[in-house]
Amino acid sequence: MTTVSIKKKVRIDHCHRCGGLMVPEEVHETGMVEWRCVSCGERIDPVIIEHRQKQVARVEAEKLFAGTGNARLN
Image (tube, rainbow, N blue to C red):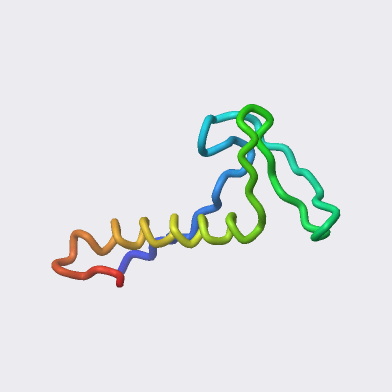
């Protein structure tokens, strides 16, 4: 039996849109730290990061099950 880890971290040091540098920026209204791209202005917050991590895990799981018949994640 082979164990495969499908949880991957989403990289937040480079912008997914333009590849620019992402820097942390505190939002005083919410007290949270968001990431902002210095090139294009893309902003991501902790909720977006969590959703992207789940999407990466889902894609990896679908790749893992793709070779075993009709198994798919709903």
